[in-house]
Amino acid sequence: MNIVLISNPTSRHQKPDFPPPGIAYLGAVAHLKGHEVQLIDGGLRSMTQIIQDVKEAVPDLIGVTCWTIDRKMMWKLCAALKTSVPEATLVIGGPHATIYPDHIFKKTHASAVIVGEGEETFAEYLEALAEGRDLKNVAGMVLRDENYGGFHTAPRAPIKNMDSIYRPYYAGFRDFSFSNYGGFPPLPLPTAAVISSRGCVYDCSYCASVQFWGKSWRQRSPGNVLEEIRGLVEEHGIKSLYFFDDNFPVNKKRAIAICEGIIKSNWNLKWACCSHVKMMNRELLEIMKASGCVTIDFGVESGSNKILKNINKQQTREDIIKTFDLVHDTGILPRAYLIVGSPGEDESTIDETIDLIGQIKPRSSIGANILWLLPGTAVYENAVKNGYISEDYWLESGDVPYNLQEHSLENLEELRRRLMLGIAREKGGFRPFVTYCLKRLYYKYPFLSIFRSLVPKQLR
Image (cartoon, rainbow, N blue to C red; front, side, top):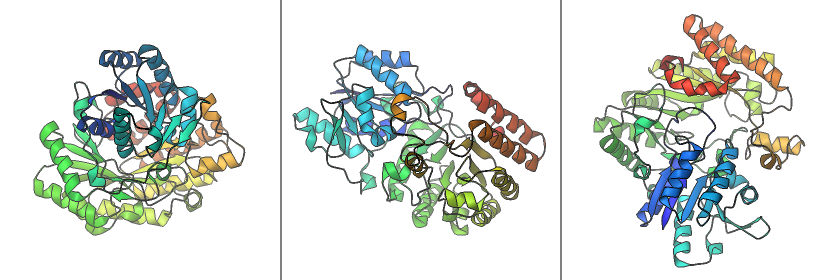
């Protein structure tokens, strides 16, 4: 079978950080089962280029990822595919499709949706197609019915043996190179992303990770992870890594074993990861530093204990300060993600966050994004319960709504400005003020993201 897999096209005018892992994993499944596979990164190719690539491939089957963000671009792509390659079977997967599979059938001509984690389901789906078996017996899918609804097959359990997942099939991308991607600013290029675990042991109210990956945290073994890294170094010449896990060091013994393997292999890699502040201790941080870790991203989100409680962050201001002091002490530069507009936000909580940033001194404070109402999150479910939004919104609009239940957008933008300016003043000097000005420009004119690569790394 001739298969084309496409990641969700984007409306953002900037080079992607990394290759899309979802279709790279599924591409490996299809390739190792003997199918011809072409992967298309919707973040690198224009809509016209994508359609041209697909037409040249003459596929029997097309798979497309659907994210909540940029789902409007996905609707547009599917409409073009229906016209350009009408004989090809279309199947959709990804976070938004998982939560609202019935919407997929209303907005596209897809014949099926793969729900959640896709590797095992996709493998069985391809076998069933090839053998002419009844697709209703393939667990983890929703199949189109005559009423534009969907027949839900039996649910599929999360993959237990994470080492059974094939390495991403980068060879499926045309003219592939990690140099085509922007990477992670603190790390030297070329940079690769590695997913060493799936899921998270926390359940923050603004995050849909648990909805997609399930309520368990599942890990690949150290040896399996190190073998993928070896391939990236030897086959692609990568100089750095970003562990794309929601929470890399949940199992500290495993994290230490991975660090020890990196040191023993003499790859001289730099790397970074994400973590909850409660995951850190000195032993772990010291070996992370010795193995090349330069940055850890923490979801700080707020400096107010009231806000942290409201978003179920399961951390306090005191936890944050303690961890950041420890990370600084071991020579790693921590970064802090921030959110504006969580339930209960006001000027006083913003000022608490400014004060906290002054104390913890992160390498950078990332985002300060206004809180989105994303499907699959507790904050979204609360908005539905309050009658603020309904599921029909995702069919009628292409945008992602902000949480405007307590404040107007104008007020939230002012709170964000207060936060960013306050942080710049706390840090003092020329560079923080320049960073503040650049962020203000970006939030006002998002299309300027096309020039992101021209911004010096220390200002990103």
